[in-house]
Amino acid sequence: MRYTEFTPFDIVLLAQGLGVSVGLFLATTVIGLLIGTLWAVVRFYRVPVLTQVITFVAELLKNSPVLVQLFLVFFGFPAFFHINLGPVEAAVITLSGNTAAFVYVIAVSAIESIGRDQIEAARAFGLTKWQVLRHIIAPQAMAFAIGPLTGLLVNQLQVTSLISVIGVMDLTKIGNILNLRTLKPFIVWAVVGVLYYLAAKLIAYAGATLERRLRAHTAWKGL
Amino acid sequence: MIKAQSVRKVFGSVTVLDGVDLTVAPGEVVSILGSSGSGKSTLIRCINGLERLDGGSITVDDFDVSKPKELAEARKRSGTVFQMFNLYPHMTALQNVTLAPVEVLKRPKAEAEAEGRALLASVGLADRADAFPSQLSGGQRQRVGICRALAMKPRYLLLDEVTSALDPEMTADVLDILAKLAKEGTTMVFVTHEIEFARTISSRVVFLEKGRLVVDLPTEQFFAADGGLANPRIAQFLSKMRKD
Ligand SMILES: Nc1ncnc2c1ncn2[C@@H]1O[C@H](COP(=O)(O)OP(=O)(O)O)[C@@H](O)[C@H]1O
Ligand SMILES: [Mg+2]
Image 1 (cartoon, helix red, strand yellow):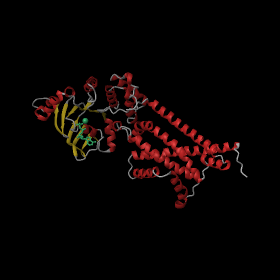
Image 2 (image 1 turned 90 degrees about the horizontal axis):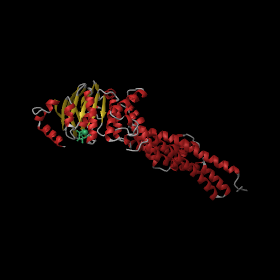
Image 3 (image 1 turned 120 degrees about the vertical axis):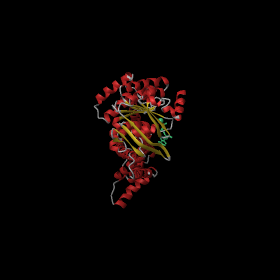
Protein backbone atom coordinates (compact mmCIF):
# COMPACT_ATOMS: atom_id res chain seq x y z
CA MET A 1 0.00 0.00 0.00
CA ARG A 2 1.28 3.53 -0.79
CA TYR A 3 1.23 6.50 1.43
CA THR A 4 0.12 9.24 -0.95
CA GLU A 5 -0.36 12.09 1.52
CA PHE A 6 2.35 14.69 2.18
CA THR A 7 3.94 14.44 5.61
CA PRO A 8 5.95 17.01 7.60
CA PHE A 9 8.98 14.81 6.97
CA ASP A 10 8.75 15.67 3.26
CA ILE A 11 9.81 19.18 4.13
CA VAL A 12 12.95 17.77 5.75
CA LEU A 13 13.57 15.72 2.62
CA LEU A 14 13.18 18.78 0.40
CA ALA A 15 15.46 20.77 2.65
CA GLN A 16 18.07 18.01 2.44
CA GLY A 17 17.76 17.91 -1.32
CA LEU A 18 18.11 21.67 -1.52
CA GLY A 19 21.15 21.44 0.75
CA VAL A 20 22.78 18.87 -1.51
CA SER A 21 22.07 20.92 -4.62
CA VAL A 22 23.31 24.16 -3.11
CA GLY A 23 26.30 22.45 -1.50
CA LEU A 24 27.34 20.85 -4.79
CA PHE A 25 26.74 24.12 -6.56
CA LEU A 26 28.91 26.06 -4.12
CA ALA A 27 31.71 23.50 -4.10
CA THR A 28 31.84 23.19 -7.89
CA THR A 29 31.60 26.98 -8.23
CA VAL A 30 34.61 27.53 -6.00
CA ILE A 31 36.63 24.81 -7.76
CA GLY A 32 35.47 25.98 -11.19
CA LEU A 33 36.33 29.62 -10.45
CA LEU A 34 39.79 28.66 -9.21
CA ILE A 35 40.59 26.36 -12.13
CA GLY A 36 39.06 28.60 -14.79
CA THR A 37 40.93 31.64 -13.47
CA LEU A 38 44.15 29.67 -13.22
CA TRP A 39 43.75 28.57 -16.84
CA ALA A 40 43.24 32.19 -17.87
CA VAL A 41 46.40 33.19 -16.01
CA VAL A 42 48.35 30.44 -17.77
CA ARG A 43 47.08 31.83 -21.04
CA PHE A 44 48.01 35.37 -19.95
CA TYR A 45 51.59 34.17 -19.45
CA ARG A 46 51.38 32.44 -22.84
CA VAL A 47 52.85 29.26 -21.40
CA PRO A 48 53.60 27.21 -24.50
CA VAL A 49 51.80 23.87 -25.02
CA LEU A 50 49.87 24.21 -21.76
CA THR A 51 47.91 27.15 -23.17
CA GLN A 52 46.94 25.17 -26.25
CA VAL A 53 45.98 22.16 -24.15
CA ILE A 54 43.78 24.30 -21.92
CA THR A 55 42.06 25.98 -24.84
CA PHE A 56 41.38 22.58 -26.38
CA VAL A 57 40.00 21.09 -23.15
CA ALA A 58 37.84 24.16 -22.52
CA GLU A 59 36.46 23.89 -26.06
CA LEU A 60 35.56 20.24 -25.48
CA LEU A 61 33.85 20.98 -22.17
CA LYS A 62 31.94 23.96 -23.54
CA ASN A 63 30.67 22.23 -26.65
CA SER A 64 29.41 18.90 -25.34
CA PRO A 65 26.35 18.21 -23.20
CA VAL A 66 27.00 18.17 -19.47
CA LEU A 67 24.95 14.98 -19.21
CA VAL A 68 27.29 13.22 -21.63
CA GLN A 69 30.30 14.47 -19.63
CA LEU A 70 28.65 13.21 -16.46
CA PHE A 71 28.15 9.72 -17.94
CA LEU A 72 31.70 9.71 -19.26
CA VAL A 73 33.05 10.47 -15.80
CA PHE A 74 30.68 8.26 -13.84
CA PHE A 75 30.84 5.22 -16.11
CA GLY A 76 34.05 5.96 -18.00
CA PHE A 77 36.47 6.56 -15.14
CA PRO A 78 35.88 3.16 -13.51
CA ALA A 79 36.13 1.42 -16.87
CA PHE A 80 39.24 3.17 -18.21
CA PHE A 81 41.21 4.26 -15.18
CA HIS A 82 39.89 1.68 -12.72
CA ILE A 83 38.95 4.50 -10.36
CA ASN A 84 35.66 3.90 -8.62
CA LEU A 85 33.69 7.08 -8.25
CA GLY A 86 30.61 7.65 -6.16
CA PRO A 87 27.85 9.71 -7.75
CA VAL A 88 28.74 12.77 -5.68
CA GLU A 89 32.40 12.61 -6.68
CA ALA A 90 31.47 12.18 -10.33
CA ALA A 91 29.11 15.13 -10.03
CA VAL A 92 31.76 17.35 -8.42
CA ILE A 93 34.34 16.51 -11.09
CA THR A 94 31.96 17.05 -13.99
CA LEU A 95 30.32 20.24 -12.79
CA SER A 96 33.63 21.78 -11.67
CA GLY A 97 35.16 21.09 -15.07
CA ASN A 98 32.17 22.51 -16.86
CA THR A 99 32.09 25.66 -14.73
CA ALA A 100 35.86 26.05 -15.16
CA ALA A 101 35.54 25.98 -18.94
CA PHE A 102 33.00 28.81 -18.97
CA VAL A 103 34.84 30.80 -16.28
CA TYR A 104 37.95 30.48 -18.46
CA VAL A 105 36.15 32.00 -21.44
CA ILE A 106 34.80 34.88 -19.36
CA ALA A 107 38.15 35.50 -17.64
CA VAL A 108 40.05 35.51 -20.93
CA SER A 109 37.74 38.06 -22.50
CA ALA A 110 37.79 40.14 -19.30
CA ILE A 111 41.59 40.19 -19.36
CA GLU A 112 41.63 41.05 -23.04
CA SER A 113 39.18 43.89 -22.49
CA ILE A 114 41.81 45.87 -20.59
CA GLY A 115 43.47 48.50 -22.79
CA ARG A 116 46.96 47.64 -24.03
CA ASP A 117 48.19 51.18 -23.40
CA GLN A 118 47.82 51.14 -19.62
CA ILE A 119 49.48 47.75 -19.44
CA GLU A 120 52.40 49.03 -21.48
CA ALA A 121 52.69 52.06 -19.21
CA ALA A 122 52.88 49.83 -16.16
CA ARG A 123 55.47 47.61 -17.85
CA ALA A 124 57.56 50.63 -18.83
CA PHE A 125 57.61 51.66 -15.18
CA GLY A 126 59.07 48.30 -14.31
CA LEU A 127 56.07 46.43 -12.94
CA THR A 128 56.38 42.70 -13.48
CA LYS A 129 53.78 40.78 -15.43
CA TRP A 130 52.38 39.51 -12.16
CA GLN A 131 52.16 43.01 -10.67
CA VAL A 132 50.39 44.20 -13.81
CA LEU A 133 47.95 41.32 -13.52
CA ARG A 134 47.33 41.99 -9.87
CA HIS A 135 47.09 45.79 -9.84
CA ILE A 136 46.03 46.80 -13.33
CA ILE A 137 44.22 43.90 -14.95
CA ALA A 138 42.52 42.02 -12.11
CA PRO A 139 40.52 44.88 -10.57
CA GLN A 140 39.20 46.04 -13.93
CA ALA A 141 38.68 42.53 -15.30
CA MET A 142 36.69 41.66 -12.18
CA ALA A 143 34.31 44.57 -12.69
CA PHE A 144 34.00 43.48 -16.32
CA ALA A 145 33.44 39.79 -15.56
CA ILE A 146 31.06 39.91 -12.63
CA GLY A 147 27.96 40.33 -14.80
CA PRO A 148 28.66 37.40 -17.16
CA LEU A 149 29.82 35.31 -14.18
CA THR A 150 26.55 35.86 -12.34
CA GLY A 151 24.66 34.77 -15.45
CA LEU A 152 26.86 31.70 -15.74
CA LEU A 153 26.39 30.68 -12.10
CA VAL A 154 22.60 31.06 -12.22
CA ASN A 155 22.70 28.69 -15.17
CA GLN A 156 25.11 26.28 -13.48
CA LEU A 157 22.74 26.01 -10.53
CA GLN A 158 20.05 24.72 -12.89
CA VAL A 159 22.59 22.38 -14.49
CA THR A 160 23.15 20.68 -11.12
CA SER A 161 19.71 19.08 -11.53
CA LEU A 162 21.24 16.75 -14.14
CA ILE A 163 23.21 14.89 -11.50
CA SER A 164 20.01 13.34 -10.16
CA VAL A 165 20.20 10.82 -13.01
CA ILE A 166 23.27 9.15 -11.52
CA GLY A 167 21.60 8.90 -8.13
CA VAL A 168 22.78 11.98 -6.25
CA MET A 169 20.09 12.90 -3.71
CA ASP A 170 19.76 16.47 -4.88
CA LEU A 171 16.64 18.58 -4.99
CA THR A 172 15.49 17.15 -8.31
CA LYS A 173 16.02 13.58 -7.13
CA ILE A 174 13.99 14.27 -4.01
CA GLY A 175 11.32 15.81 -6.17
CA ASN A 176 11.29 12.65 -8.23
CA ILE A 177 10.92 10.46 -5.14
CA LEU A 178 8.10 12.58 -3.71
CA ASN A 179 6.38 12.61 -7.06
CA LEU A 180 6.47 8.85 -7.41
CA ARG A 181 5.12 8.40 -3.93
CA THR A 182 2.41 11.04 -3.81
CA LEU A 183 1.45 11.06 -7.50
CA LYS A 184 0.93 14.80 -7.21
CA PRO A 185 3.39 16.05 -9.86
CA PHE A 186 1.93 19.50 -10.13
CA ILE A 187 2.44 20.30 -6.47
CA VAL A 188 5.79 18.59 -6.11
CA TRP A 189 7.44 20.10 -9.18
CA ALA A 190 5.96 23.52 -8.48
CA VAL A 191 7.53 23.48 -5.01
CA VAL A 192 10.85 22.20 -6.38
CA GLY A 193 10.77 24.82 -9.11
CA VAL A 194 10.15 27.61 -6.63
CA LEU A 195 13.07 26.43 -4.50
CA TYR A 196 15.42 26.53 -7.52
CA TYR A 197 14.00 29.90 -8.43
CA LEU A 198 14.65 31.34 -4.99
CA ALA A 199 18.20 29.98 -4.93
CA ALA A 200 18.85 31.45 -8.40
CA LYS A 201 17.47 34.81 -7.31
CA LEU A 202 19.79 34.75 -4.34
CA ILE A 203 22.79 34.21 -6.64
CA ALA A 204 21.68 37.02 -8.95
CA TYR A 205 21.21 39.31 -5.99
CA ALA A 206 24.63 38.49 -4.57
CA GLY A 207 26.19 39.08 -7.99
CA ALA A 208 24.47 42.44 -8.39
CA THR A 209 25.51 43.53 -4.92
CA LEU A 210 29.11 42.53 -5.56
CA GLU A 211 29.11 44.32 -8.88
CA ARG A 212 27.79 47.50 -7.33
CA ARG A 213 30.42 47.31 -4.64
CA LEU A 214 33.23 46.66 -7.11
CA ARG A 215 32.24 49.65 -9.17
CA ALA A 216 31.50 51.90 -6.21
CA HIS A 217 34.87 51.06 -4.71
CA THR A 218 36.60 52.39 -7.79
CA ALA A 219 33.92 54.96 -8.64
CA TRP A 220 35.17 54.16 -12.10
CA LYS A 221 32.97 55.47 -14.83
CA GLY A 222 34.47 53.57 -17.73
CA LEU A 223 36.94 54.77 -20.29
CA MET B 1 73.92 57.73 -20.10
CA ILE B 2 71.50 56.34 -22.65
CA LYS B 3 73.41 54.75 -25.49
CA ALA B 4 71.71 53.46 -28.60
CA GLN B 5 74.00 51.84 -31.14
CA SER B 6 73.02 50.78 -34.65
CA VAL B 7 69.47 50.15 -33.47
CA ARG B 8 67.32 48.28 -35.95
CA LYS B 9 63.63 47.61 -35.62
CA VAL B 10 61.54 45.81 -38.19
CA PHE B 11 57.77 45.42 -38.34
CA GLY B 12 57.01 42.70 -40.86
CA SER B 13 58.80 43.77 -44.00
CA VAL B 14 59.10 47.43 -42.95
CA THR B 15 62.33 48.65 -41.40
CA VAL B 16 61.17 51.26 -38.93
CA LEU B 17 64.55 52.00 -37.30
CA ASP B 18 67.56 51.58 -39.49
CA GLY B 19 70.89 51.83 -37.71
CA VAL B 20 70.08 54.55 -35.20
CA ASP B 21 72.91 55.85 -33.01
CA LEU B 22 72.00 58.16 -30.16
CA THR B 23 73.71 59.08 -26.93
CA VAL B 24 72.05 61.05 -24.17
CA ALA B 25 74.24 62.19 -21.30
CA PRO B 26 72.91 63.21 -17.88
CA GLY B 27 71.73 66.82 -17.89
CA GLU B 28 71.03 66.93 -21.59
CA VAL B 29 67.69 67.69 -23.16
CA VAL B 30 67.63 65.98 -26.53
CA SER B 31 64.71 66.73 -28.80
CA ILE B 32 63.77 64.24 -31.46
CA LEU B 33 62.10 65.74 -34.49
CA GLY B 34 60.81 64.01 -37.57
CA SER B 35 57.65 63.66 -39.55
CA SER B 36 54.90 61.29 -38.60
CA GLY B 37 55.89 57.67 -39.16
CA SER B 38 59.62 58.36 -39.08
CA GLY B 39 60.07 56.06 -36.08
CA LYS B 40 60.20 58.47 -33.13
CA SER B 41 57.75 56.58 -30.94
CA THR B 42 59.37 53.29 -31.85
CA LEU B 43 62.75 54.63 -30.73
CA ILE B 44 61.29 55.67 -27.36
CA ARG B 45 59.61 52.27 -27.05
CA CYS B 46 62.90 50.56 -27.74
CA ILE B 47 64.60 52.56 -25.00
CA ASN B 48 61.98 51.64 -22.38
CA GLY B 49 61.88 48.04 -23.53
CA LEU B 50 58.35 47.98 -24.92
CA GLU B 51 59.75 46.84 -28.27
CA ARG B 52 62.39 44.20 -28.81
CA LEU B 53 65.34 45.24 -30.95
CA ASP B 54 66.05 43.48 -34.21
CA GLY B 55 69.62 44.69 -34.24
CA GLY B 56 72.10 46.89 -32.41
CA SER B 57 71.92 47.61 -28.71
CA ILE B 58 70.56 50.08 -26.20
CA THR B 59 71.98 50.57 -22.74
CA VAL B 60 70.66 52.78 -19.98
CA ASP B 61 73.43 53.47 -17.48
CA ASP B 62 75.15 50.38 -18.90
CA PHE B 63 72.10 48.17 -18.37
CA ASP B 64 71.27 46.37 -21.59
CA VAL B 65 67.55 46.62 -22.33
CA SER B 66 67.68 43.43 -24.38
CA LYS B 67 68.47 41.35 -21.31
CA PRO B 68 65.39 40.81 -19.14
CA LYS B 69 67.28 41.10 -15.84
CA GLU B 70 69.01 44.30 -16.88
CA LEU B 71 65.85 45.72 -18.41
CA ALA B 72 64.28 45.81 -14.95
CA GLU B 73 67.17 48.00 -13.78
CA ALA B 74 67.09 50.11 -16.93
CA ARG B 75 63.40 50.73 -16.42
CA LYS B 76 63.99 52.03 -12.90
CA ARG B 77 66.17 54.71 -14.45
CA SER B 78 63.83 56.01 -17.09
CA GLY B 79 60.31 57.34 -16.79
CA THR B 80 58.02 57.57 -19.79
CA VAL B 81 55.29 60.10 -20.44
CA PHE B 82 52.92 58.95 -23.17
CA GLN B 83 51.13 60.79 -25.92
CA MET B 84 47.75 59.40 -24.92
CA PHE B 85 48.54 59.59 -21.15
CA ASN B 86 47.97 55.84 -20.65
CA LEU B 87 46.78 56.35 -17.08
CA TYR B 88 45.28 53.49 -15.09
CA PRO B 89 41.55 54.33 -15.29
CA HIS B 90 40.52 52.47 -12.14
CA MET B 91 42.97 54.34 -9.94
CA THR B 92 42.90 57.89 -8.61
CA ALA B 93 45.50 60.42 -9.72
CA LEU B 94 47.43 59.74 -6.54
CA GLN B 95 47.25 55.97 -6.95
CA ASN B 96 48.45 56.33 -10.53
CA VAL B 97 51.47 58.20 -9.21
CA THR B 98 52.31 55.91 -6.28
CA LEU B 99 51.80 52.48 -7.85
CA ALA B 100 55.26 52.06 -9.36
CA PRO B 101 57.23 53.61 -6.47
CA VAL B 102 55.52 51.24 -4.04
CA GLU B 103 55.59 48.11 -6.22
CA VAL B 104 58.84 48.53 -8.12
CA LEU B 105 61.00 50.64 -5.81
CA LYS B 106 59.41 49.10 -2.68
CA ARG B 107 58.93 52.53 -1.13
CA PRO B 108 56.77 52.64 2.02
CA LYS B 109 53.24 53.53 1.01
CA ALA B 110 52.86 56.52 3.32
CA GLU B 111 56.08 58.06 2.05
CA ALA B 112 55.17 57.46 -1.58
CA GLU B 113 51.78 59.06 -0.98
CA ALA B 114 53.25 62.12 0.70
CA GLU B 115 55.65 62.56 -2.20
CA GLY B 116 52.90 61.86 -4.72
CA ARG B 117 50.71 64.56 -3.21
CA ALA B 118 53.60 67.01 -3.23
CA LEU B 119 54.28 66.21 -6.90
CA LEU B 120 50.64 66.67 -7.83
CA ALA B 121 50.59 69.94 -5.92
CA SER B 122 53.66 71.11 -7.82
CA VAL B 123 51.74 70.81 -11.09
CA GLY B 124 48.63 72.48 -9.70
CA LEU B 125 46.66 69.32 -8.96
CA ALA B 126 46.68 69.39 -5.16
CA ASP B 127 42.89 69.23 -4.98
CA ARG B 128 42.56 66.61 -7.75
CA ALA B 129 44.70 63.92 -6.13
CA ASP B 130 41.69 61.72 -5.39
CA ALA B 131 40.00 62.18 -8.75
CA PHE B 132 39.87 59.40 -11.32
CA PRO B 133 41.32 59.99 -14.79
CA SER B 134 37.80 60.05 -16.27
CA GLN B 135 37.09 63.06 -14.06
CA LEU B 136 40.10 65.03 -15.30
CA SER B 137 40.66 67.15 -18.39
CA GLY B 138 43.28 66.12 -20.94
CA GLY B 139 45.78 68.63 -19.62
CA GLN B 140 45.22 67.47 -16.06
CA ARG B 141 45.63 63.84 -17.13
CA GLN B 142 48.92 64.59 -18.79
CA ARG B 143 50.12 66.41 -15.70
CA VAL B 144 49.28 63.29 -13.73
CA GLY B 145 51.22 61.34 -16.37
CA ILE B 146 54.25 63.55 -15.77
CA CYS B 147 53.96 63.15 -11.99
CA ARG B 148 53.69 59.39 -12.42
CA ALA B 149 57.00 59.42 -14.27
CA LEU B 150 58.68 61.85 -11.87
CA ALA B 151 57.59 59.80 -8.85
CA MET B 152 60.10 57.17 -9.91
CA LYS B 153 62.85 59.77 -9.62
CA PRO B 154 64.06 58.74 -13.04
CA ARG B 155 67.42 59.80 -14.33
CA TYR B 156 65.95 60.06 -17.80
CA LEU B 157 62.55 61.33 -18.73
CA LEU B 158 61.25 59.96 -22.02
CA LEU B 159 58.51 62.12 -23.49
CA ASP B 160 56.64 61.02 -26.60
CA GLU B 161 54.60 63.86 -28.09
CA VAL B 162 53.14 64.55 -24.69
CA THR B 163 51.17 67.60 -25.84
CA SER B 164 49.86 66.46 -29.21
CA ALA B 165 46.58 65.24 -27.76
CA LEU B 166 45.99 68.55 -25.97
CA ASP B 167 44.43 71.83 -27.01
CA PRO B 168 46.70 74.90 -27.09
CA GLU B 169 45.84 76.17 -23.63
CA MET B 170 46.50 72.83 -21.97
CA THR B 171 49.62 72.43 -24.08
CA ALA B 172 50.98 75.64 -22.61
CA ASP B 173 50.36 74.33 -19.06
CA VAL B 174 52.24 71.13 -19.76
CA LEU B 175 55.10 72.83 -21.58
CA ASP B 176 55.56 75.20 -18.64
CA ILE B 177 56.09 72.21 -16.40
CA LEU B 178 58.61 70.69 -18.82
CA ALA B 179 60.49 73.99 -19.08
CA LYS B 180 60.76 74.07 -15.32
CA LEU B 181 62.03 70.49 -15.25
CA ALA B 182 64.59 71.31 -17.93
CA LYS B 183 65.79 74.27 -15.94
CA GLU B 184 66.23 72.03 -12.91
CA GLY B 185 68.58 69.88 -14.94
CA THR B 186 66.26 66.95 -15.65
CA THR B 187 67.58 64.78 -18.46
CA MET B 188 65.01 64.45 -21.18
CA VAL B 189 64.50 62.69 -24.44
CA PHE B 190 61.82 64.78 -25.95
CA VAL B 191 59.85 63.70 -29.01
CA THR B 192 57.82 66.68 -30.13
CA HIS B 193 56.25 68.73 -32.86
CA GLU B 194 56.56 71.88 -30.73
CA ILE B 195 59.53 73.20 -32.68
CA GLU B 196 59.87 76.58 -30.99
CA PHE B 197 59.59 75.04 -27.56
CA ALA B 198 62.15 72.38 -28.43
CA ARG B 199 64.47 75.14 -29.53
CA THR B 200 64.24 76.89 -26.17
CA ILE B 201 64.76 73.89 -23.91
CA SER B 202 66.97 71.50 -25.88
CA SER B 203 70.68 71.16 -25.67
CA ARG B 204 70.65 69.01 -28.80
CA VAL B 205 68.24 68.30 -31.59
CA VAL B 206 68.19 65.15 -33.69
CA PHE B 207 66.19 64.53 -36.82
CA LEU B 208 64.73 61.17 -37.79
CA GLU B 209 63.79 60.41 -41.34
CA LYS B 210 62.40 57.05 -42.38
CA GLY B 211 64.04 55.32 -39.48
CA ARG B 212 67.43 56.91 -39.99
CA LEU B 213 68.87 59.48 -37.64
CA VAL B 214 70.08 61.90 -40.27
CA VAL B 215 71.13 64.88 -38.15
CA ASP B 216 72.35 65.20 -34.57
CA LEU B 217 73.45 68.73 -33.69
CA PRO B 218 73.59 71.16 -30.78
CA THR B 219 70.38 73.18 -30.82
CA GLU B 220 71.86 76.40 -32.13
CA GLN B 221 73.59 74.67 -35.01
CA PHE B 222 70.50 72.67 -35.84
CA PHE B 223 68.53 75.84 -36.42
CA ALA B 224 71.38 77.69 -38.15
CA ALA B 225 71.16 78.33 -41.86
CA ASP B 226 74.50 76.64 -42.46
CA GLY B 227 73.74 73.85 -39.95
CA GLY B 228 70.64 71.66 -39.87
CA LEU B 229 68.73 74.02 -42.13
CA ALA B 230 71.24 73.36 -44.86
CA ASN B 231 69.55 69.96 -45.18
CA PRO B 232 66.59 70.59 -47.49
CA ARG B 233 64.46 67.91 -45.83
CA ILE B 234 64.86 69.55 -42.45
CA ALA B 235 64.21 73.04 -43.82
CA GLN B 236 61.07 71.70 -45.45
CA PHE B 237 59.97 69.92 -42.29
CA LEU B 238 60.51 72.98 -40.12
CA SER B 239 58.69 75.36 -42.40
CA LYS B 240 55.77 72.93 -42.64
CA MET B 241 55.62 72.56 -38.85
CA ARG B 242 55.73 76.32 -38.30
CA LYS B 243 52.86 76.89 -40.69
CA ASP B 244 50.58 74.56 -38.68
N1 LIG C 1 53.29 47.63 -33.72
C1 LIG C 1 53.51 48.00 -35.02
N2 LIG C 1 53.26 47.15 -36.02
C2 LIG C 1 53.48 47.47 -37.30
N3 LIG C 1 53.95 48.67 -37.69
C3 LIG C 1 54.21 49.58 -36.73
C4 LIG C 1 54.00 49.30 -35.35
N4 LIG C 1 54.36 50.38 -34.63
C5 LIG C 1 54.76 51.30 -35.53
N5 LIG C 1 54.68 50.83 -36.78
C6 LIG C 1 55.08 51.55 -38.01
O1 LIG C 1 56.38 52.02 -37.81
C7 LIG C 1 56.52 53.30 -38.39
C8 LIG C 1 57.03 54.27 -37.36
O2 LIG C 1 56.05 54.47 -36.39
P1 LIG C 1 56.25 55.41 -35.15
O3 LIG C 1 57.49 55.04 -34.45
O4 LIG C 1 55.00 55.41 -34.37
O5 LIG C 1 56.44 56.82 -35.87
P2 LIG C 1 56.35 58.27 -35.26
O6 LIG C 1 56.24 58.18 -33.78
O7 LIG C 1 57.60 58.94 -35.71
O8 LIG C 1 55.15 58.90 -35.89
C9 LIG C 1 55.18 53.67 -38.97
O9 LIG C 1 55.21 53.40 -40.34
C10 LIG C 1 54.23 52.77 -38.26
O10 LIG C 1 53.15 52.47 -39.09
MG1 LIG D 1 54.69 58.79 -32.53
